[in-house]
Image (cartoon, rainbow over all chains, first blue to last red; front, side, top):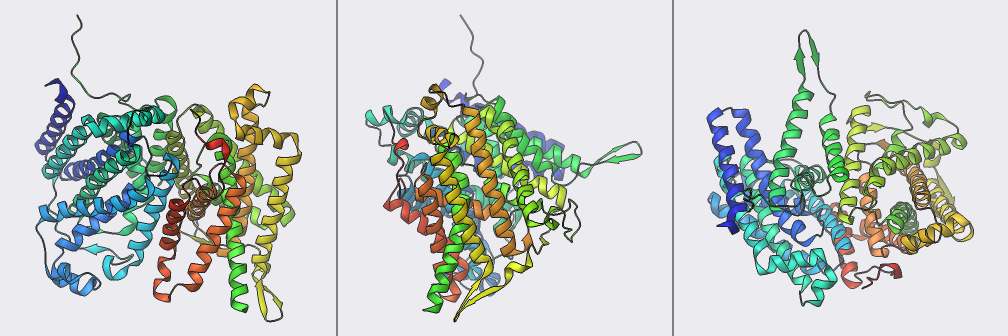
Length: 333
Length: 304
C-alpha cells in the first residue's frame, strides 16, 4: 500500500477537485479546470523525461503540436478535410475515427517522432541535447506553419469535435499519474534517476544512459502527444502559434515551480501556476473598488508569471514540493 | 558567377550577424556555463531603445535621431545596463545553481523582457527606418553590393579583432580566459569572479547592441520578438561550433549563415518557406556527426 500512496493521494486530490467543480457548476470554472488538467497531462509527460533524466527539454510542446494536429486529421469531418486539407493522405481524408482511437494514435505519432529524434540527439551531452530539443521545436513550428495543404498553415483548423470536459480530463490526468509513477519506480526509471544524480557513477555501474534516456523520451512524448490531442478536442480550434514559446514557457514554469524532480511537483506546480495566472488575469480585467476601476495593464500576467518563476528558482530551487513525493504523515516511534 | 559571388556575400553578412550573436552567447557560456536564452531580448531592447516609449502605432525616434557617434554608445550603454541588471538580480543569486535552472532562469528573463516591452510599447510591430543611407548599393562592375552588407561584415571584423586583442593582450582579457578555462582555479589565483562575469555580461551587451542596430537597419521593423530567431540561430551556432570555444562560436555563426543563405538561394521555390526547418535539421545532422561540435574545448571534457 505504501508503495502506491503517492499516485493514490494525487489521484484522490484530482477527483476531489473535479467533484468540487461539478458541485459549483460554473461554466467558466469548468473551462479553466479542464484546460489546467490537460496542461497537467502535458506537464506530467514533460516531467517523465526531464524529471527522471535531468536533461532539460524545450521541445516537448512540439510533440503536443504533433498530437493535436494528428487527432484533427483523424476526427475532422471528411467534407471539410477534402476542401481545406488537400494534402492529407486519402485514408485520413475519407474517414473519421472515434475519439479514443484518435487520441491513442496521436500519442503514438508523437512517440514515433520522439523515437527518431531521440536516437539522434540522446547521444549528445545533456546541454547540447537541450538545445537540440529547442531546434526541434523550431522545426515543428516552421513546418506546421508553412505546410498549408496539411495543417492549414497559419490559418486555423476548426470543427474538431469538442468532447473533452472536466471528467474526461480528470481521467486522463489519473492515467498520466499512474503511468509516470509506474515508470519512475521501474528498473529503467531507477537507473535513469541514478544517472541524473551522478552520470559517471551510473555509467560505471553498467547503466546504459543513452538507452534509458531514449526510453523516457519516447514515453514522455507519448503522454505529451495525448495531451495535445486532448487540447484539440477541448478547444475545437487549432493554430500553430498556440504551440510555441509561450506555451513552452508556461508548462516549464509549472514543472519548475512545483519541483523538477518529483511527480508531486508536476501536479502541484500546475495547480500553483494556474492559480497565479488566473489571479493575475482577473486583475488585468480589473477590480471595482467603490467608484474607481483598477486594472493592471496588459502583459502584467506574463511578467508576474516570469517573476514568480525567477523567485522560485532563487529562493526555493527544488520547487514547492522540495523534490519530495506526497505521502501520509508518518507516525514517529 | 555574379550570382554566386552575390550569394557568398549574402552568406558572409548573415553569418557575421549570427557570429556576433553566437559570440555574445558563447562568452557567457564559457565563463558561467549559462546558456543565455535572453540574449535575443537584449538585442530587441537595443532596437526599441531607439524610439520614444509609447503604445502609439507610429514610432517616434528618440535616441535613434542622434548622430551615429552618439547613438552607438547610448544604445550600447542601455543594453549593457540591462545585461548587468539581469546578472545582479537573477543570475548572481543563482551562481551555485545547476545548469538546467540557469537555462530556465534565462528563459524567465526573456519572457519578462518581452512582455515588459509589450507593456511599454504595445504588441503591434512598428516601422522604423534607421539610417536610410545604408540601403543603397555599391556597384563594382556588374556586381552590386548592398552597402548595409558591407557595413555589417566590416563591423563584425572590427569587433572580432577588437575582442581578440582584448582577450589576448590585456590583463582583464587574460583573466577572462583563465576564468573560462577553470573558474575555481582562476579565483584561487586571484581573479575576481564577479568582475570577470560582469565584464562578460557587459561585452555580451555591447555585441547585442551592435547586432540590434545592424539587424534593424536590415528589416526596418520593430517587433517584441525580433531577437528570438537571432538568438535561436546564435545558440545553434554555439553548439555546432563547439560549446565553450569562442573561435567555435564564430565558425558556427558563419556556417549557420552560409547554410541559411544557400538554402534560401538553391531550394526549389515551393520548399523555400521550409528554409528554417531545413537549417535546424541540418544542425541536428552536424551534431550527429560531431557531438561535441566542430572545435572542441578541452575544458569541457569531463573529469572523473
